[in-house]
Image (cartoon, rainbow over all chains, first blue to last red; front, side, top):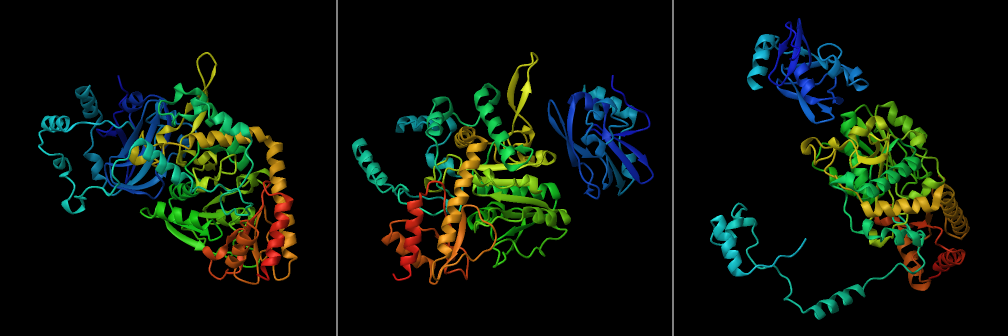
Length: 129
Length: 448
């Protein structure tokens, strides 16, 4: 059973978003990290990059596969978790805290409201299982 | 590829299966105006005996580089121990292609790993790939890599980098976003001159050392200048024997070293096939092009070799690959590996020392001739520019016809305003008698 914190928003691409004001912190879900297997490298964007919603912002390389990661909300990257360069395993061990990937300043914070709630994401996972 | 002949009946049968009536219909997706619509202009069929006669006549036109030669400029005459050719002709090596099912070919991976290790030791850098096609394409790949690392597009390259390398790199990168800016050289020293083109949009400063004129660049100062604007410093080496004596580019601050490995046991062969060297710092490895072999241990602790970081390669993620190259110069890299391992550290130093000493002797003697001088003041390795009192092409023609030797390369082929200059290369394969004959010929050419 995947860990799906209630206070976050989710995308169908298995990213989570934590919104504070105009800013959103983004990572991949427990389900996503479990499907990928041991993460060995994360190719990250740079601060200042502008992304439109559903654009790939980087990729996660695991021992099994390389997968693109998508930004669910349009905005400009304000912070990148450089710590993942040295400890990519944080994405596996602690996907919702130490495993966060980027922070963006959202163009339109209302976009976050359109994302899935924890309950909806859980239903989505069950439906696609 | 095998030629599989088929009869008209078999062709009709195959066409019927795919629902067509004529072979021409197979090409209907190609616009009419670009179709050839005529037979190829090739000669009529020949009997086997006739084919052999034609090929023998063509082969008789080949001339081996048997005359004494002082021509370098990117391709160098060096002695290759017999063991190199002997070992690479073992069928396990000679007939194998770059491993696509790699881990089953442990022997191949082992020599690639050794090759990479040796290239790292020579360049003074941390990681090297399994090789590129040749020095010029390696340089072009370095341009692209610096754009990926810095996310900048301006490539500042010195005109003292081999002119043909610059041309290849231009062709190779012409459809990308690179903006290539060339900077000149100092007419007194022969080294890179004005660096004012470097700015905060610059992805790379690209220089060659020893440069096309044979001059050894001040790499440390150039590295500092590149790094001061946040650009990467790329060093090109066309004469790999120079690694035997000169301070490694990596220890002088190079971020990427690319080069030509032909000097390591590879025949001049009219310019190919040769061997591209590519090395960089470990922190940039994920942006490096080409195959990469690593060492790994199985669950019993046995050492083995694997291809690693393959996600950079196009057969894994085509659109995200660092390069469209996912092969290497396998056999040529093997030859270079055997050469380097046969020579060893001392052997390579010895060859390099012979080169620098013989070239210094030649330069000194030529500079003493009336009307001739060495125009550039920078230290040189085994090549140097000579300035004469008349067009260099005429001097070289006299040497060729009167002395039966190739005296070097007229710089006017590539550089305006250098009509009287020619590039002379002296290696360990040039005897003292040959060098004296060259000096004598140059002296006599004054009166020709």
